[in-house]
Length: 307
Image: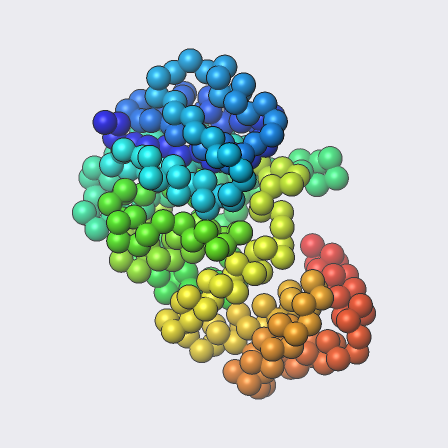
């Protein structure tokens, strides 16, 4: 049995997949299996996988596209390792990623559930590469459940799934990925994990490039808001009142942009009741009264100017 199971879920990313696979095979730590879940791809993904000759690779293909959460859950069901790592089809690991993380697990508390690192990201904007290093959660170590909940309101999800390694036993307690979510499935998993286990942060990038490619799940903002809505209700009883009002405003604001005005007004009203002296909440609510198209256009313009 391998000590580490690497789960790589992919869907129509044949153009980038070979680079991701090679970065796993190039690891200095070699006691792993690489489980590739093809979530119903219609391109030449199978040919890309078949071009690699390595008995550590296991290839599973869904007959239809089931979504990222379901694909990764298939990987978890097949995994045999004591530790689980996740690779994305358009990302590249540095060679010592697994080695660094395994060494920390071996020399740390048994309550340690997850080790994660920084990453460097590349966004393609109008044909140009924008390279940046996303900021992770602070504090970064220990029991950070409450920190996660506060960061939901600040729109900072903090940790990328591609950077983490998780002890496989943890999934027996917290369950798998929530297949109701289209986005933020990793954030939801981390929040549930943080309720019971210690986190350890490596303050160094172990992911050389984390690419955001056109058509990727991470580019769908409406899915993000809908998923945040569900996560909010799952953990609402443990969220502080000040954070709740910020979350309600954030949801109302973005539902307005996407012209989901019934939900927008509902959340903005709740935000006003929770924070009656915050005039920003009242202003956005009044905007929704002046006309659907105008509200959405003004808020989109505001976001573009800020960006």
